[in-house]
Length: 307
Image 1 (cartoon, rainbow, N blue to C red):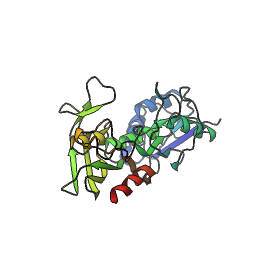
Image 2 (image 1 turned 30 degrees about the vertical axis):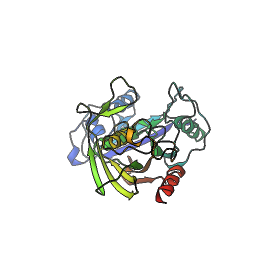
Image 3 (image 1 turned 135 degrees about the vertical axis):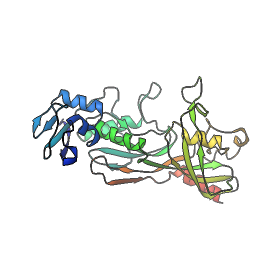
Image 4 (image 1 turned 180 degrees about the vertical axis):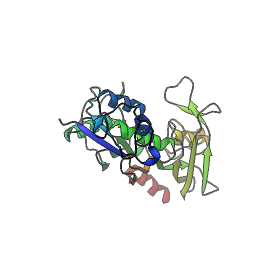
């Protein structure tokens, strides 16, 4: 199987004269410290076509190259042939529209049948041997867009965009209750619930968490909302909706007593869908905008609520 390789090139300008190779790898080519160390050990950092030490200083007109090889194998993920809905793919990343009820990554309870198992088979069948790197994750019963980086450089670049607020995620959800205003913001810190591996809660000791929402349709006792995440905490939308008194339909983990017997059976999972993701491509810098349509179960629930 051929080795996957990425070649990053930087021509040194007057502005970058006298800087070190390592400085430019980090600030101009946005390569992580860990990956720089790996390339240094394999002699894959070149200045004017010759291997160079990372502490060397550059001059105007020099050409710095980073040759990143990706020949990775994950023995822990069993390849499984699956019918994945791929909505975007290139040599840097791949995105799928995940159905509800599917776990993203293998665990002790879900060793097979996950998105990662199917994606591993798909990539290997196309000669791409790499680790499975989800840029962000979705809960098992949340549907929609999942983006995977195909190498550590892309993973680091997209993680940096997230930290800098340049990676945008929008969700669609159906919640209980009515809203007096067409939009709003939930700004409440979230922490892990003490004693629980899975559950989260709002707490003053938690990490800052901000969710913007917009009411797309208001029904008698439910609403169809668009959510835009400013932070990306585990279960953020679900916890914020519960804290605001508007839990998601079908959400058994974060329901409220007053809604437990309302609209039972309308949908068999939390009514939440990752609908839009946008970011800058890590290599070209061009905007990437991804969209995934609402799945059938949420469309069906909306049809019933509209009657």
